[in-house]
Length: 168
Image (tube, rainbow, N blue to C red; front, side, top):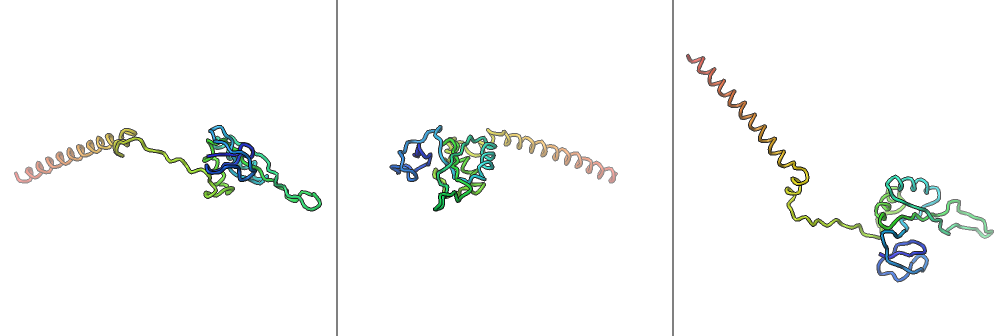
């Protein structure tokens, strides 16, 4: 994945130059600061507190998208702010921004990395190794069956003894 060092926008690997500002692109590194979303000024403090609550360091950079009319008077009250996060936190920050409705899933530029399972053990072996639950379950089941059988034997002997008492 490439990103523009001047405007901090992420670009696809095939891109030659930044589509936003025309700047040079470079390879991303975990320390690279990238843009996740663009939000209005009133939502900055809300999003900042949500990102920091998730442990995501963030900063905001104003864009030059203020609108002026013919008399050079500022028309838009809220200026846009780019949400900047470290590249390694992109997915987590994107999910937070998506929760607030600032971005949609189809806006995500990076595919989420899938976890590769390198463990060749069966599900039962992994489960038992992780919790020991299978062994405990069978042990408890064995104890319960033993107690039930012991009760049946005692009650059976008692019933047979009672039967013979009535006969004689």
